[in-house]
Length: 240
Image 1 (cartoon, rainbow, N blue to C red):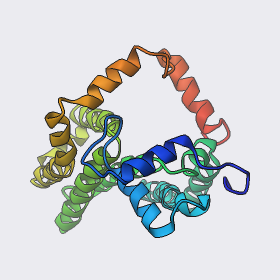
Image 2: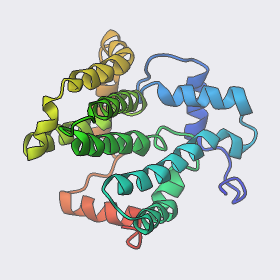
Image 3: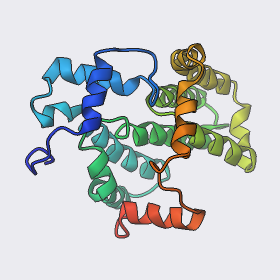
């Protein structure tokens, strides 16, 4: 759709393609996954056609829609409820936007939602006789998803910290008693380690870059209520 609407290659896509030609465990302004995505896209499809360049991001968008239905199912929602939720995500302008060009943003909700789905399933299966293998499976899913999420975009840290705080402050803290928590945490650390070591080696350039950005006019700074209002408008009111 973006190609036929007349939109050519976006400047960020050019940057990611160049990063993909110089693969590393990190970059000043992002972890390495988007560069790998760009390199894979260029090797498989080239970049002369926008639809093929953006195919992987479009597939991530499809995964976001699928995971929406899976989360509704995990929360014991009906099929019509799952279909309605998936439709809402499909037509939300923000997802149509971020899934229509090559970037790390298309995969961001995939990793967050996989973590959320895993936690819902862990809470449902924890302590149920004969379900230990499912608890183990979902802790592994959470660890892999969060670890890959950290190699995609660092902001998943906010989600993980918020989830930990929520678990500690509610009766769901019981799921932390599982021995598989250590496996999940170990997977997160293992998968995030390459970028972390890169950051340490180069004296945390991403942190320095974020500090510099915070002192510039690049980002819009909003108070809490205005931020929440902006989130609703970004999702569009009829899909919120």
